[in-house]
Length: 401
Ligand SMILES: Nc1nc2c(c(=O)[nH]1)N[C@H]1C(S)=C(S)[C@@H](COP(=O)(O)OP(=O)(O)OC[C@H]3O[C@@H](n4cnc5c(N)ncnc54)[C@H](O)[C@@H]3O)O[C@H]1N2
Ligand code: MOO
Image 1 (tube, helix red, strand yellow):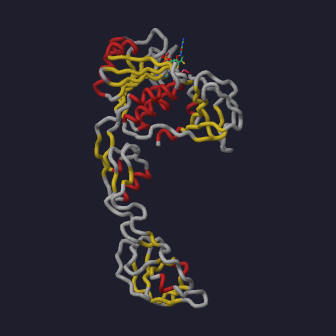
Image 2 (cartoon, rainbow, N blue to C red; image 1 turned 90 degrees about the horizontal axis):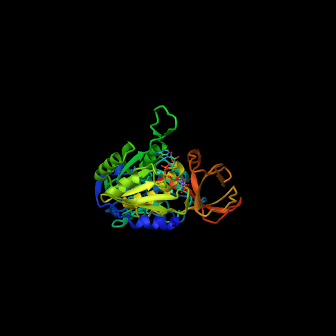
Image 3 (cartoon, rainbow, N blue to C red; image 1 turned 120 degrees about the horizontal axis):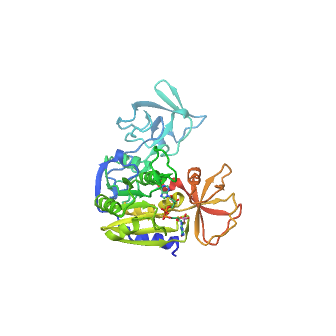
């Protein structure tokens, strides 16, 4: 048996980013992975501008201003956002609004709350600090600088920033095409009546949902009839249309399944035994040169292995530079008294007291744990946890950012 860390390292060694990229509208780039360094051609802001609605002026003109001896300056012009004013003369000021460019000659803005008006005169009773309330040209982004590196995911913040430098298109890795299929005589499609001995194909829906959130394009080959020939045909078809082929189930020691012999006939398959709970069996191989990942059939095992192993592999192939997760360190409000011989990812949920609660059953068949939880806690092999201990917590949200 190999450890989780060893298994992950082995998978990532096989994960070369795909070469194809595409240029797409920035507007539709949410969740995509950048295939270029994004460099700004412009300064942001493009010119010094006002941070407040108020008056712009030379600070030197107000050096003597105080409550007892206010300074009065004529208001020479009015500059709204989007307009360019004319240079102000010494001893004058201009009405200015948030975002409007500072006119030549002005170096400071005084917010309107601190100013009285007497007709055409503005009355100042305090000496401002030179440069107050001015946003300097290039203070957010300097022209020529790289604002986002190749290999990062387009988040709302990254998209807004890219728009702020005027880019309307970005070059991203194309979506990874993942061919998924499911086999098993017991599987029934949701929406159909359950026959005796059957179970609904929950893995199909769960895996598709995970792949969508990872940003992959799932091609669903559906349920394959339980025969070697049908399984081989499905795999051959998947190999023609996919970058990765994925399935769940049929990987352990059962005799019924055709996936393993079908993959072997068309390529190769290695069955790994990972010291991981849930999720001991993992198959990795290739079908006609296309990588094949077989997740464990137990739904919770499939869920955990898809998040903790398949995801880093898929995201690296999609060009993401940082695929490892940084766990949060949070207080456990539960006991875990029985140390296991495998590293365990248990389903937990944050409570209102800022700690973590444990789902009452951690059986790998019980999908309600995944629906209830908002993350996983990593419990190393041989470790136990006492209420109040600080544990390593992976919020589900982190996997989709
Ligand atoms: N004698 C042993 N039996 C088992 C072992 C073992 O080491 N020795 N390992 C257990 C562990 S741990 C796991 S995990 C499972 C993994 O088995 P497979 O990956 O071969 O999966 P199956 O046997 O096909 O199915 C397991 C379980 O999951 C259900 N399943 C399968 N596909 C779906 C689906 N699409 N949707 C919902 N549920 C699914 C299936 O009905 C079984 O109940 O093996 C243990 N056994
Ligand atoms: O190791 Mo299995 O994946 O727990 O059910």
